[in-house]
Length: 512
Image (cartoon, rainbow, N blue to C red):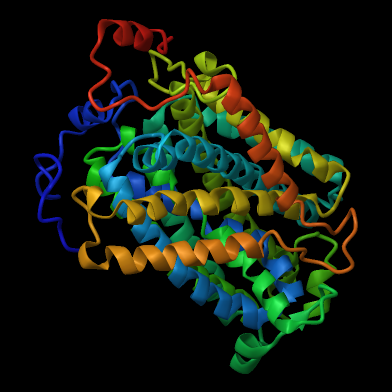
């Protein structure tokens, strides 16, 4: 990546770390969070949130119905390339504005208060939907593991109980502070890399029979009820697009990361390409090992990948691999709670949420936004509650995640492009590639945003409807209504505006 010719502040060379605390004050915020995360830890949180062992495995059954092997494999390669463009474009803006608010702060600075407001609400919806999707997926896989080991029969009610226990675990872990979160994310990286290697290796060596390369890369399956294969293939991209989300975690943790103006940007990009490689290997390994396609879809475990492992390895081997996946999913959910809670903290710091004064409080002992952590897991729990009554509700939660967070990624990029030369890059810059990569990102996100509002199953009824469109309308309506209540108090601070005695006194009220 080329460096900007006119750096905005001193120390813009990545080899000469920026004084991040001073930079944060320049951006208008007084530092209150503990800056205890290094560059690897920042990369690790986005890699953990993307979590190919969570997204790929949880939505593999969806992919089997919606396009089958061909769409899963080629879709992963294509979507990954476009997401890498989105990630690079977002990383460039992150380098210029390394704050916990991340996307909405960038949008506010580049486009104005309303751009920031709606970006923030979309980002928040996506992050909270991601917690629900990740942890509910972990609950489904835990139920499948218990079924194999102890004959446990998973039901909607028991899965919900497991889901709530996982949420409670993640809230508790996050209350100990960002240092523990960073350590767990670092372990998570190696667990994911090792886990993918073990799963792919075992599935390649142990089964006597494997599918042919022709089958893996060309077999098209359509169980959606729609007749148009192009439409089905497009909808099938949800598996990859859902998995490739959450990399804004690096930006949300930037106020707790050393040399964040460089390392947070690098963390985003590295997390995407590392996940791109690992995810392709995982999808290919799993698909080559399919023994009974229809049987995997109708598995008693409720989780098609589990049945593929059972057919290929037997119950004992499948249980061992499932345990690897479940632990990876737990790492993923824990990292997502950290990212979402920092977004809640930052949005409340700028008075954007109902009860902002409560959610922005920071523990004096751990320097962690405790109340924001609890709000994040409680809302995630509420989002998943419809799964008790509808088998399609989990798909709706994943769609909520995608439809909320994906547009939020590209709004700051679009505003940066609109600003032209007025945008002053940080120390991590795309240089001459900034505009072409930025426009590719904008066009791709516009495409997938429309795509994932479309119905996924035919006929469309209460059970099969794609509720992402309703969720989008609800959150935009809520944001609009609350705008008229909070517009006088909401606002990101102007540069170096946190120096007054009054604002310092207000800041003290955030720490408990």
